[in-house]
Length: 327
Ligand code: SF4
Image (spheres, rainbow, N blue to C red):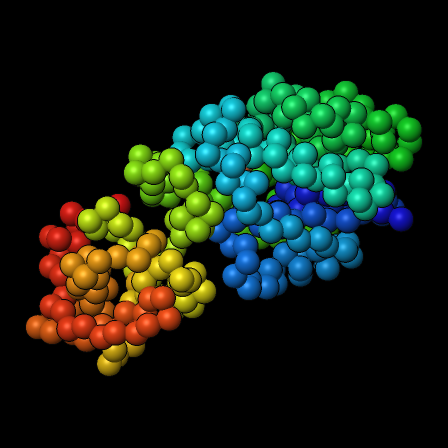
């Protein structure tokens, strides 16, 4: 039977948290949350599966959606430097994790949090605030910093040996890297991370909120991909590579217009709504601008919407117009 649920991003800290408990013989389940940007579009989560498999811990993957969006629209504790509502996000996830903990028959939740590692959500006072708001007092354990906290219920009851946990604090990853090396642990690299901490995503997010308070999950997910433009009040997203082409194709639905260069391989475009003829021409010219035919005088662009397909011929937009329209 599973005794503990470990929040598992696949990063260094969560892998070590899982390992510290697993090596004590505690039966665990790893819980991986997927941000809404990557939910429901067929990603395989291959790396995460590999990291959990290497630790011999079963994995549960939870894709985030509407609930995450409601949280991010109105975070009680505000945003960090960019569009990252880290304190609310942690509370939201821990509350969700608690429900899953109960479902799985586990008795505690472990995380890879380290005191003082991140400015917003990992200050000691914030960690206490998060724990209290998520109603997890006594059953939330942070194995990497455990000795800096009061003993939790599983430690008091003898399920977890506190002496075998750590007392890491601060931004340096030195001790974690040494630990990972010593135990041959595999984990994801720190690069990448949550796109809400990225300045460009933050600009897109706040621009969207300034245009409409009715931010949909579709709008939110789209933030993670492509080049973004605002034309005649509508959003156009143009893909940057083949992998984004595949993703934009999946986003196309009865409420969007989809753009594809007719005669050559090139970027795709998608709008956030059905648009009028003038806007279609502008959107097609921007899509053409990012294709190999950018220096041609005329380019054929296919537009698919509401189950129909039409082809128009446009002159690729000039870079001045693209820059002016870009978000
Ligand atoms: S970095 Fe992103 S995923 Fe992590 S707590 Fe902050 S908002 Fe949530």
